[in-house]
Amino acid sequence: ETGVTQTPRHLVMGMTNKKSLKCEQHLGHNAMYWYKQSAKKPLELMFVYSLEERVENNSVPSRFSPECPNSSHLFLHLHTLQPEDSALYLCASSQGEGGTQYFGPGTRLLVL
Amino acid sequence: AQKVTQAQTEISVVEKEDVTLDCVYETRDTTYYLFWYKQPPSGELVFLIRRNSFDEQNEISGRYSWNFQKSTSSFNFTITASQVVDSAVYFCALSEGGSGGSNYKLTFGKGTLLTVNP
Image (cartoon, rainbow over all chains, first blue to last red; front, top):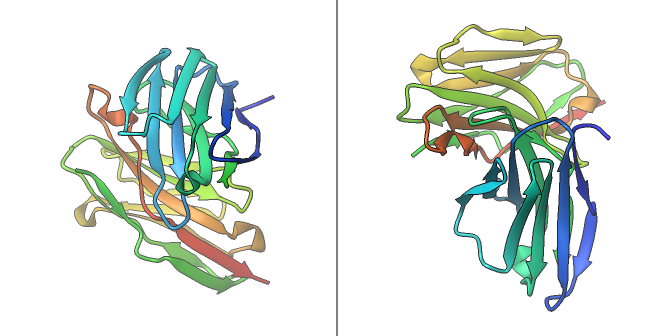
């Protein structure tokens, strides 16, 4: 595997389900990001981890819970989501502050 | 606060035409970085270029070229002899160069959907 990978690529879940999105970077970077991309809205930064510590939390509802067990892996745990949470969730990684962010292919999430 | 404006929501051209995508930015920082990303229908954001605020040299990479003008706060992207494979949404983005975590944040424009017709 190269670059940034994300699984699953597509996910359909009910509002009462619990699921997790996984991101893995193979670039040796030390910062990882979660973004949300909804239809007709700019990309929204959700969380930033640097050296496995959360450095940014952009007022994201608690039904989204990130986890960064090491510098290569990032998870987004989802529970009791709402239909308006349906979106493309993109993971990215970079080397240090200001480093170019490289993105994964995203997970298309549909909440019914 | 930083802001990126891509005024063109959608552009449609015929193959082999040249096309320019506009990007205007706002920032109070003197050190900042500008980016262009391409998002094909598959969804992945593909990095195209990064420019820092102290380097105003234009850049050419194959059919792609970028024109950075600090005087007008613009960072425009031109595709020469467009091809169907260039069809995608293109995003311009800005990050600040300060310390304290601010330069983790990429501010994206709303994107320009480019359709290249055969």
